[in-house]
Image (cartoon, rainbow, N blue to C red; front, side):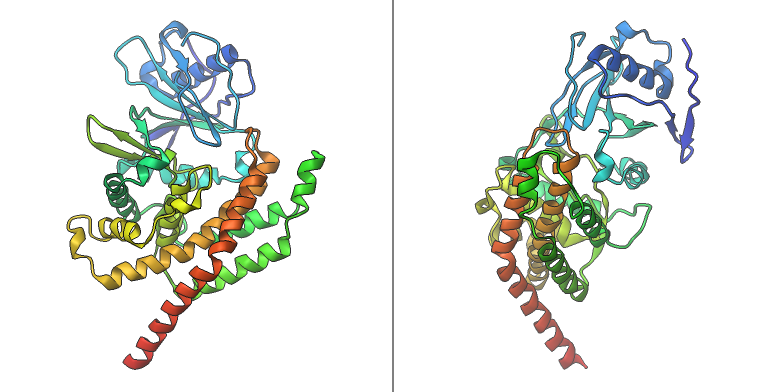
Length: 385
């Protein structure tokens, strides 16, 4: 059994090849391509037969359809196909992620793949085992995906806070500048130049004022520039589905770093708090000050959370709630782009309107919070000088 594709090495450690997996193929043909990729990239699987490798779906998130590599027909659809591969020998299964045809419109794959070796080395997410033309092979994590209800529980909140802090201390290759504004303006430019073939969708799209959106983005950016918040390597998409928990081992996993980059620490945490609302966008579930302080204590001082100073809590409270506004703007614009390019059966334009409505509802409150903080900081600086 041999393949024409040359196997190369990324960073002298991770194998890569130019093979392409077509996610639009019928299930049996797709499974054949997936098996071929696995045998190419995983040296110890090179001589395994098709009947020693099976492909089964596993659950995924809003933009993901996932699969494990069941000898039964599987209907593959969606933008990202996750598959895990295993043999009838005692081999650990793996996950094969096949990128969707249009996901490059919202995800920087080069940035993601550049970061994964460092993340894998620090035990974040699944280990990267190989890369192919439109996807990657990773270790399979056998754990339970968390729900929005789970992440609101104090015990899980503390665990998540500690893991987020560990991530934020990591050095990862790539630009150390915050990528938030580059990404937001990229989405804004794309979103403002779309045409929908679906007439009802086009009419809803035409209700959006991009002049207003641009002005709102600019106003948030100006305050962000003045705030000068700490910049760390961030996940940027800390929804409940990107956490898994192994109850037997008591281990929490943070997964799927598709949007990972350097960004403001408050933005990463704000994204997480906004996800308390779930896909139903019930923002009455956004955490209050007490719940946020519980999270902050375990984030700031994981070893002794009760020793955190009040000033530290207040500073992170301001950062996080101000960047909640940026989070709403980012995902609002992301949703417009997805409404055009995604094949997922999801009302992305409705998601835009819900996120932007919450932005406008909290705008005055959170701008007042950060402006008051900046005024106090300026007064202290004046006294010191």
